[in-house]
Length: 83
Image 1 (tube, rainbow, N blue to C red):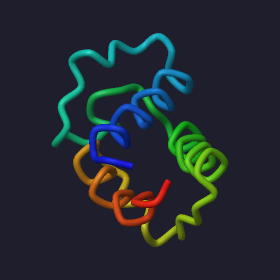
Image 2 (image 1 turned 90 degrees about the horizontal axis):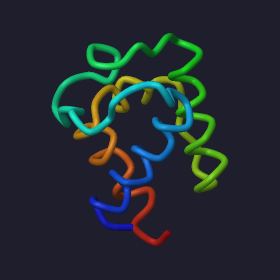
Image 3 (image 1 turned 120 degrees about the vertical axis):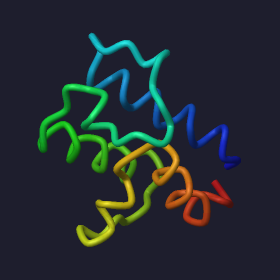
Image 4 (image 1 turned 180 degrees about the vertical axis):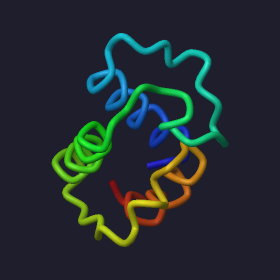
């Protein structure tokens, strides 16, 4: 997957988890939690959805890498390069 494809996939997951949020104004370099009303369960839902859709493992110690769109895409790119 390309960086743009990963970004679109993450946006899709976010829209499923937070359907009332306006994702059109999402800033890539600002933490999701600072922009969206996400609690810890919502964050875990994002991780679980990534695991389910793409059959990847994301260790808990790597969760901080999923804080913003930029860091999420950078973290996922090597994992999803063959997806």
